[in-house]
Length: 391
Image 1 (cartoon, rainbow, N blue to C red):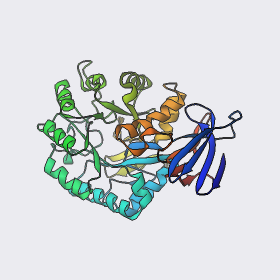
Image 2 (cartoon, one colour; image 1 turned 180 degrees about the vertical axis):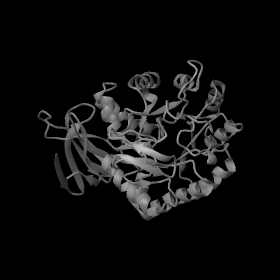
Image 3 (cartoon, helix red, strand yellow; image 1 turned 45 degrees about the vertical axis):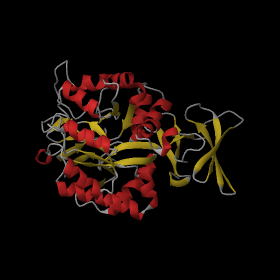
């Protein structure tokens, strides 16, 4: 990697993740000012360069949990800084099913963290509230505690939005509840993305939700019954619905390769990668007692499941680079396509400033990485400033 800095601008030589060509990316005033093709053959001494990763669903990582109350602002700040090391330049901290007051406190803490740290605010693109308006049934509910699951409640959601300073941008709910369509319509009115997840809804209820404005499926294929009718069911209905974008987890545990292949083929440009990472990611294998889900097991292979049932996962212990690598090494898509699934696609879906990726005029949010048998993040830049370096 060659880095040159002159007159307030910096130029970084690397291999473009899409073309495989050697380029010099010039940063000026926190934006990409130029992308110059360079002479000479790209070789292994240069890193690859791609747009910063965008994660729509992070519950925690590296021992820092956003869902074990109380959530101090320092935890939010530390978590945000840590995920820069995973190439993430924008994310949606995810607050899951809990007591009303615990959710409110976590949301307010995220806001305070943004107010106190400019780079944290720049990295947090919005907040994702996953639940508690989800299915109360075993299987679809996943690891969410049943005692806090409830029907959609717009007045309660408004209270949370006030605590979040308007930063809630995604809410995951199940349209099986009475009043769900009216709740979704309110989300649309106030600019909140309604996402279908942890559901046991009928195909008709899925259709009604989409007609009301639901736009996304949360970790499609997970948070569902272990056994389903072959057809119809809520997975087929979401796969077939062209107006739904689909997030999926590509850690090798949440979905079989065949299912991921079907999602990619069915959704095409509307498929997106998420981590759904929880705070046990990056921790040592073993049994843990967590606030959400009770006793869970993190295996040597990286799978995280409920201690009482290894078939029910308790979130993901892996971040987006793991998923990108898995997709590419499994030949479900190329490395550049996998990188797009975890960067440009979610940025486009949420209409973020970084939605155009590595283009002139875009925010200088980018990642330098090595790719051969393993994907390794070398450096992460946020608004043109180095926020992580592996060396």
